[in-house]
Amino acid sequence: MTFAATILTLYPEMFPGPLGQSLAGRALSEGRWSCDPVQIRDFATDKHRSVDDTPAGGGAGMVLRADVIASAVDHALDSQPEAPILAMTPRGNPLTQERVRALAAGPGVTILCGRFEGFDERIFEGRPIEPVSIGDYVLSGGESAAIVLLDACIRLLPGVMGAASSGDDESFETGLLEYPHYTRPVEWEGRTIPEVLRSGDHAKIAAWRKRQAEIDTRLRRPDLWERHEGARVKSPSGAHDKKKER
Ligand code: 6GU
Image 1: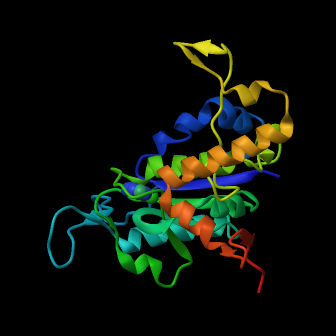
Image 2 (image 1 turned 180 degrees about the horizontal axis):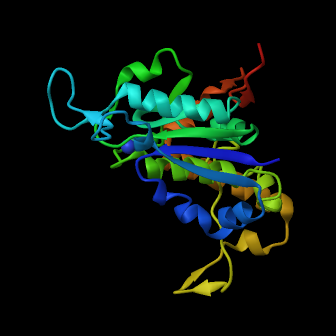
């Protein structure tokens, strides 16, 4: 089964881009996913083939026209009606590993890439288009965000990664950041690999990794730590127990 990616963009030559290399590139050659960039401008109807116009109410920049975007989306819906449609925008719902997993388990995705100030908001009414953001910063366009989203999906497709992708330990799969890694040389610039990792005691190693994951998450991602701790309740003894399912 092929994961079909349709990308609606003003810069189709940006695809597959970095996804033509390495892991994703190999998976593309093997037919595990397909990449179909579509030029939004091909759906413009006026003689200047315009795709944008000035913002209603005034202000800086340009806004992508609802009529042109809708025609491009309807074309994608015709060719791949089962694929969810995501619009890349810093105003979107935050992308999560959970959402990535759900997308990767499906038939593919249609991704709408914005440039300029964004989309006419009316495209989100009447069509099943979900706005998605990849983080709290602003990119010059949705194309690089689409590449991020596709990379995250592709590595999860069957046969793309080996044992590593089953990764129950991976960052976010546990709700915590992943533990730190080390490899040879054992001593480098006067720094040594933690002794426990060379002990061969697998129970001790697992306990150490869990502890490190907790320390790093608390320090770097207090938001994730809060959520992780929120899933636990204090027992009368003062020990932490997993919260009971309701
Ligand atoms: Cl999805 N698009 C743009 N243009 N900027 C972003 C983003 C998306 N996510 C974070 N910043």
